[in-house]
Length: 542
Ligand SMILES: NC(=O)c1ccc[n+]([C@@H]2O[C@H](COP(=O)([O-])OP(=O)(O)OC[C@H]3O[C@@H](n4cnc5c(N)ncnc54)[C@H](O)[C@@H]3O)[C@@H](O)[C@H]2O)c1
Ligand SMILES: [Zn+2]
Figure 1 (cartoon, protein in one colour):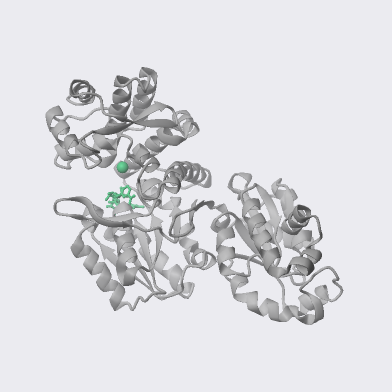
Figure 2: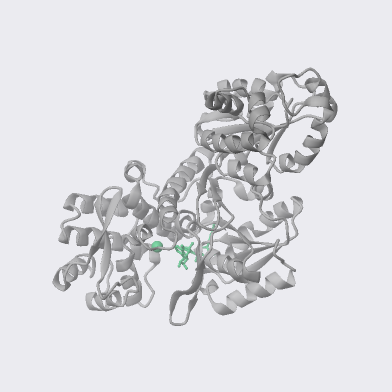
């Protein structure tokens, strides 16, 4: 028998949930065995932790105390590679369900009332099953169970059949997604990365407890033609009243007049406080859509659906939103987190090659900042071209995207409002902004970042933080990835632009420089002559 889930695509953690009597603890070990994972029963873990059986915890401390313990244990177990069975009440509250869904693949086992009645008739160890009172409990939980994207009917099936059905359900794109919870001051949100997520968006929105109100999908003309209709159809089939509004492609989307058009679309579609804005596209779309959501009616839910590599690893996570003013980029904006981010890596297959490379520059940046293993991976198997659409290639891209995004997530989790650690994300960017500015914005951001990374390494050498070997390594990798190592720009113009950099503090230019793979330091820029030498080494025809 071939497994429906190839081991490569197997989810890290599978949480079996559902009402009592659906067979979670019988089926769980079978599923675990097939996946090669350990099986854990949340109730057993709680009982062991408290030193008394679950019914005694209920009797002695009450249901609320049990739920609190359960909540904590569930969150912890969802971080392990395992099959976990949780109690029927663990996902009764939509917020608890969403918290688990941010960490693990949920599979809900269900059965009709008659089947449950038969199975529960002779149970003695279930504190809530007495006297048929379970029917009311089940009714109260029904809508939360039904919101789970993967559900398996157990009625009339023996445990072996149910286990097979669970494994088959894991063949869904919902199960293949890598899940990363992001803690932010305005609430925790989930970042899901994997192929095919746009096709299951409506189910994921429900599972993650996104409001069910009127929905406006903001996208750009190019992305709309490729993915807009299918997304809208999926949302529509999922019972959402959604419309599409197209903004100009690229940086032109980030203007006050475009923003006004988005507000207009929101009000004409009747979006209220229960409404949702979806940003489907690259960082430009996400920045304007996120800001519209952050400000319309003083804030409605925002869901990011990034479709560029740059947006998946950078712009869509971290909660910065905003638009440009004629005098400069990102001058109006907010720190507002999305409620959910769905990064469908299958969309990257249509990305123009230069946009793919632009994203790769940020991936290298993130590897240098916080993931030496990612640097090794990029060198061992350089993803120079966009992904092919076969599952193996998409899985590799999903892994790359999730790892690169994780570095940004770690930085913004520690420092949401950019007062410290988040500054590390500027690696290469003080130089890059100088290059972009001096070129009159004719140099592509990704190219500017690539050369900026090399310049940052050289500046690191000048202050004794970075070794020539690391610089050479970075240069070689960027070249392999098809990114430039130098730009034909005037060093004086770049210096002048850098002097105006808004990241200057107390008249001092600060630079982020690598000290070793996966680690950077913030240092005062080297003196004018040294900085000039750094620029001379990366500018000109070479
Ligand atoms: N908020 C943040 O934290 C943050 C971080 C980094 C960058 N940004 C912003 O992001 C913007 C750049 O974003 P970007 O690089 O994603 O570019 P982009 O959004 O401007 O998109 C680039 C082009 O790619 C096209 N495109 C997008 N997805 C596609 C797909 N799957 N297939 C085919 N074509 C596709 C778009 O139509 C557009 O023409 C900048 O404005 C930058 O300031 C924001
Ligand atoms: Zn950048």
